[in-house]
Amino acid sequence: MILLNNSQKLLALYKSLARSIPESLKVYGSVYHINHGNPFNLEVLVDSWPEYRMVIIRPQKQEMTDDMDLYTNVYRIFSKEPQKSQEILKNCEIINWKQILQIQGFQGSLGEGIRVAAFSKSVKVEHSRAILFITEDILNLNASNKSKFGSWAETGHPDVEFESETPDFKYAQLDVSYSGLVNDRWRRGKNERSLRYIKRCIEALPTACVLGPEGIPVSWVTMDPSCELGMAYSMERYRKKGKMRQTMVQFKKYLRQNNIPFYLSVLEFNEDSRRSVKQNGFFEAACEWHQWTCYPQLVPF
Image: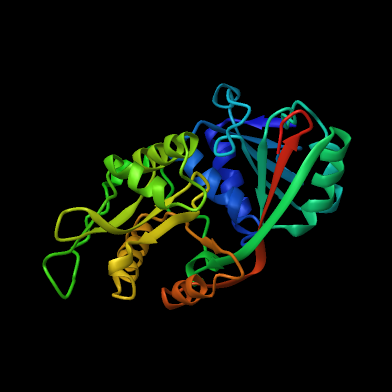
């Protein structure tokens, strides 16, 4: 595959991927952050250029030093011909099958190629899926929108005036000092690797929270390196009081103002969360969120 590291080619790819949303959204969001400072040191591989059939986003080699780090060893894939993906995926120079890793994408038809490639490397695969939620803006994305290179932080942190029924609550950027709080309440967290990942997300990417009367976050949401919103949480005593909705309303406004794509996923059985995100202006996409977690034979699972 071809490493795409020219800024003009990456911008051309970004525009091209917009035409395949929502299926390409996981890769599209990753390319957005790569084009805006690349804070997670990701790289882009295509099977050919300028015409391409497959795009793979992966961390640069120096990032993947921990064979057990599921939060870092993540590959994000979009293919125009997902049924023909297995030969590319078998290539050890593209995917390091000796590590525990995750492959993410919004095309369930990638699954067969992933399973065949993994089986050829004696790797166990666990598949999980969720409902993908997007907004109307995402479907209507115009790739000619302003997209200057540089860090998103150059536009400033979210500082929208927060309108609340009480002055005791304040909308703010989530501070990295609260990484432990987020880690303790994240379903996929509660370990040292997740804590490092959360710190990095908070430091490098847009986040939002509502601070309570004590100046401590009572609700929050973060963004990952592919522009997916996640880790959303409200402290128990503030649930069903509109704090998460207030957080999301202001955060979405900020992201739209700065042309930052966003979306989220919810497990199918989580009825409360599905109802909540719909109330926040999201709707179910035509495709689903998919993740394949891969375990090498020598790694206990």
